[in-house]
Structures are given as C-alpha cells and as structure tokens.
Image (cartoon, rainbow, N blue to C red; front, side):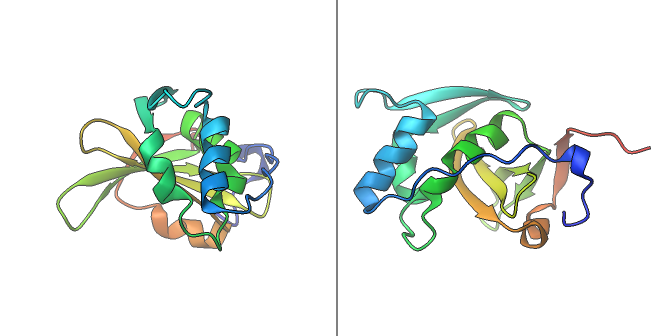
Length: 150
C-alpha cells in the first residue's frame, strides 16, 4: 500500500474531533453514521458488495479502546464502506468469514472496515492504519477492486 499510485487513492477526509468519554464517542460515531434518532437501531448502506447493515449496538465495540479514539475516523470508515479500494473475503479461525473493506487515502492514515458475514452483512468494526500495516489485511479472496492492472 505504501507504493500505491496517487491516482488510486481517495482524497483525504477530515477527522472528527476526538470525544472525551466512551459515551460521547458512541454518540459521535452514531451521529456521523446517520443514527439521527435514538429509536433507530440499524441502518442499511449500499456498497459494491451489496447492502451492509450498521447496528447501533456495534458502535460500543468500535470505540471501546479509548487510546485509539476511533471515532475520529468515522467519516473515512463510511467512505471506505461505500467506495473501497478493495474488498477481501477473509477466513477466521472459528470457520466464519468477514469482508475486509480497504480504503486508501492521500493521507498518513488508511482505513480497514470489517464486515461480519454471520446473519447477513453487518459492519463489525473499523480501524485506521498506516499504509504498511494495512497490507496484512489484504489476504484471502479478492472480491472487489476499484482498479485494473495493465
């Protein structure tokens, strides 16, 4: 990913300000994902792999590691889900699969969005990464790519 050509990268997306508490981080992510009312428990997002469900209940897990302040990258995560550079089908040790949506940006930070395939396609997690570290998530079966090689 470090040597990925610039024209394959998406424009940098501004970070959201870090929250001061876990509860605030949950609310920041919820608002940016589109949970505009507390009664909304799930949302559907259209991706190159079809519809992906975002559950309000999964946000707790995404932002629980407060040192990472992952809420800062929520706009990048949503952009990656809707317009990834690549999508990989990755096997897990418990004999399930997840989809790894890879986002490449003209910035120091890149994005991985993990979508569980248990019970449909459900966004499970997202995390920022530098380009070199993101390479370890590019394995399994390549299902989608936004580019063609000559």
